[in-house]
Structures are given as structure tokens and as C-alpha cells.
Image (cartoon, rainbow, N blue to C red):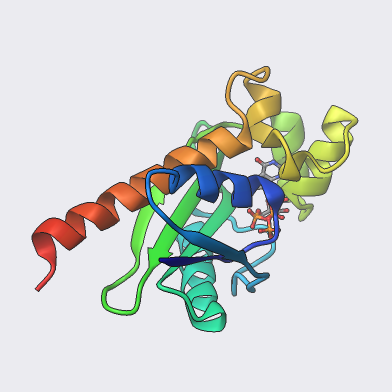
Length: 173
Ligand SMILES: O=P(O)(O)OP(=O)(O)OP(=O)(O)OC[C@H]1O[C@@H](n2cnc3c(O)ncnc32)[C@H](O)[C@@H]1O
């Protein structure tokens, strides 16, 4: 089985590899445009970005499965949530989607995003670190290292592979 990951972000690549650890697979990672804003600003937009990356990866990489993982934010009456979504695309069914951790961003960070900055550079500035998005992620910073971005996206990938396996077993016509 050839799995194409629609990103070169090492945190996402590690997450997909561990999410598929139960299966024999060859992995290829390619940069695929998300087709949405660099900073998605709703669940809807973040899901669409994940789907676009999964479908783009599948088609460009000539594989059996394409995986797209996307981070975004979602405005609520409680404040701005960080949200995370994943999609799994194959040649013979509609993409499967799954969501990951959601939690409130501190107002100081949220305010900068509302003014048009991207979370990646804002997190580096806020945490005084480099490339937070490629390592622990905002989730790692704000949970004091209890859950990092790789673990969070591994969970999303496992939700995708689990649904895929269920589909193959029970729903395939
Ligand atoms: O290389 P790609 O796959 O594009 O990975 P990315 O982390 O840069 O891009 P995403 O599309 O997943 O996220 C959209 C934006 O939000 C940022 N972002 C999302 N989740 C984050 C997190 O947990 N920590 C830091 N930045 C995050 C990210 O850096 C982008 O600026």
C-alpha cells in the first residue's frame, strides 16, 4: 500500500507513519497546496484544506491513499479555538474526515490572528522558539508538553485509518 502524505512538515509525516504503524506501507510526502487561506479561520475551511491536500496528494503522488492534515482556528463565543482536521482520500470513495484536539488560544495570540497574522510565526514569537509548528506545535506549548502536535495528529490519523478499515469491511459495495 502506497500512502502519500500531502505535506513536508516533519510533525505531520511522523504522525502519519505512526498512525499507520499497524499496516505494511510505503510512505511518500509531497507538498500539496491546501487550496484555502494560509490561516484557515473556521472548521469548514480547515476541513476543506485537509480534503484538498488528501485528494491532491493521492493524485499527484500516484498512491493508494492520500492523507491531508490541516491546522486552523475557529471563532466561538468563548474565544478563538485551535482546531485540527485530517482527511483520507482513496480512488473509490468520498474522502473520510476526522477532527483532533480543540482548545482555546490565549487572547494575546487570538488577537494577533484576528488582525491577519498566521499562527505559525505568532507561536514562534510567543514561545521564543523556532518552528514550533514542525515540532511540539501550539498544543505542545499550551498543554505544557503533555500532548504534542505529533501525538495529536497521530490520533487524527488513527481515527482516519480506523474509519477506512471499517468502511472496507462493512460498507464497501
Ligand atoms: O507545511 P504545512 O503542511 O503547510 O504545515 P503548517 O503547519 O505550516 O500548516 P497548517 O496548514 O497545518 O496550519 C495553518 C497555519 O496555522 C499554523 N499552525 C497550525 N497549527 C499549529 C500549531 O499547532 N502550532 C503552530 N502553528 C500552527 C501553521 O503554521 C500555519 O501558519
